[in-house]
Image (cartoon, rainbow, N blue to C red):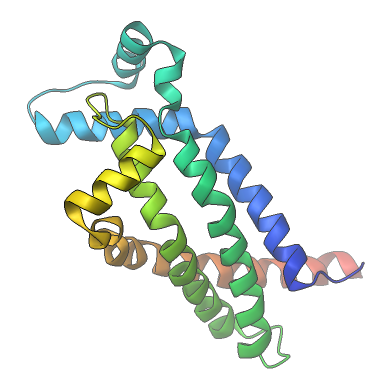
Length: 190
């Protein structure tokens, strides 16, 4: 089997991330809307069916995809960074030891920190566009107005929280993934 170089990891990661985010976008919109309803009206209990029905009735199917352009702009680059940073760090930190779970965990954390720095601004734009009462006309309008009205910091307001949430998950994920790969290779190689 031919080894992949960092450019191929970036392309594969970019394609995988973009497909994942685009395919799941309507579900993400429902989640965002339900969270927004819950925070603005805590006594209100809206289920998935009610939320979907409301969007389809008031906005049509396009309502499920409002903000998808922001995710399209952010997902590819973020996942390209994610996989290329992971593979590069894994190569350096493992020092040739494929059994180095700590190196895999640390590589996952570095990948998360880097990719979250890329996706967080577009995620904020996406979420603002997904809201039913969004005052923005599109990605460009949202970016421009947020930059002028709130400043650059608004794009990264949730960055630290996102990293704190994602880093432990990614550390465990990649350490387990690499160990499972090794285990399966041992089981099926002989």
